[in-house]
Length: 139
Image (cartoon, rainbow, N blue to C red; front, side):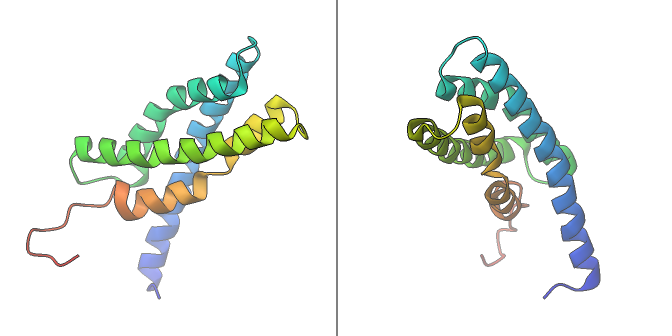
C-alpha cells in the first residue's frame, strides 16, 4: 500500500480536488438552475451549466489540484475528454430522471450533476493530469 508520506500526498490531492470540484460543481449547478428558471429544457440548461464550469475545473485542477508539470495543452485535451465523458453520463442520468417523472426538473438536475465527481477524480489523477512519461520509461 502507500507509505505515510505518499498517503498524505494523495489525501491532500483528493482534498484539493474536492475543493476545486465543489466550486466547479456549484458553478455548474447555479448556472444550470438559472438557465432552467428561464424555461429552457433541463438537458439544455445542463449543457449551459457545464460550459460555465469547464474553465474553472480545468484551471483549478491544472494549477491547484494536481500542480501539473506537463504541458497545459495536453492536460486541457485530456481533461476535455474526461469532462465530456462525465457530462455524457450526467446527461443520460438527467434524461432518465426527468423521463421517470418521479422528481422535479431542479432535483433531477442537481442529482445528475452530483453523480460524476468520484470517477472524474480517478480519471484526472491517473490520466488527465498525469506527468508525461520519460521516453525510456515503461508504461
